[in-house]
Amino acid sequence: MKKSCLFCFLLLSALLISCSQKNHNWVIEENRHDAYYYYTIKQAPDSFKEFTGTNIYYRQSRSNAIYAWLVSHKEEIEKYLLKNDLQIGTSKFGDKYLFLPDGFFVTQINQDELSYIWDILSSSYAGFAEMQEKGFSKKKLMAVKDSRDFHKLFTKYIDDCHFTIRIRDYCFDKPTARDEGTFASKDPAGTYFEKETQNAYYIRFNDCVSEEYMTVFPSSVLNACKKEFIILDARSNRGGNISPLENFGNYLNNTYYQWTVICLQDNWSFSSGELWHKFGTKDVKFKTKLVGTHSGGVQRFGTGEHYNEKLDVFVYAGQFPMDGLIPDNWLGEGKGYEPQIWATTENMKETLEKLGVVLDDIEFK
Image (cartoon, rainbow, N blue to C red):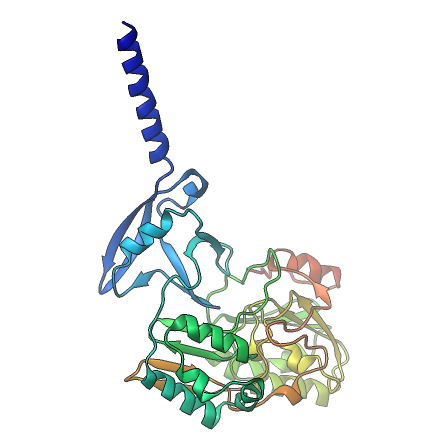
């Protein structure tokens, strides 16, 4: 009887241990779509339970994360999951995902790719002389073997958040700062609209390349200048052409606009989307307010795109230095402009209304 009870106890203990282990194990499913592999979490340890049913991501660059690969990585991902130290990342919209760690995938880089990159940088990159002053050389570049070497080298010599190099599935760019607890706007790409209220003219644009921005925005100043407040909402604006902004500001100066232009920004306002570049200078004759979080700080160099289709290497290295045109209150590359009034998307309406702006049915997303 005692032996029977002991056997039952041992069996029950084994089952409990088995269940406990099962509740703390990873199970991932490898799926295919077209030529790509992607991985779905079917079972996760208790500390990651909320991610069951979601995909596993890998942060490819500052602004891009991927979840699909051209070759299978199931075995290496499963082996890594046993460590239970995945990164919980938050998308720019606030959604949470599980990310493989930086450097998890290593891309081999060959001499032809490095030679092409050297040719582009040495012949057309406005920041090349600065890189050389810091000690960058062709010898150091040609010694690179893989993406880990590349990242280490360019992190040391690049101070330019416009700068991007993509070599097949590997991408290097310089990260920008983030204010804790802030998220990008959820307005879809290419959003542009105008709204008029009792005392304000509101213009929402989240890029500086759309047809409406290029053609409609410059003439919107004719109606906007009749209002006590002009709201230029460039939250999560990744930039583009600055000319329409220059024309808008010049018109207000030339017609002696006496009221207030309020510029809205967030951490994802980049390049020409950082409106303080034009509206925060001493040349502006009207009143201005900068509201939001810090901007992205992507200002030093202008346009310069190069692509080698045969090598599948893309280089974005600005050809025009912008340092002399940047206002004194710029905090630096990757840091941007500090707002005069702190506000996030969630409390933007309340913040502007406290300044006396009538917003009616305008919503901030």
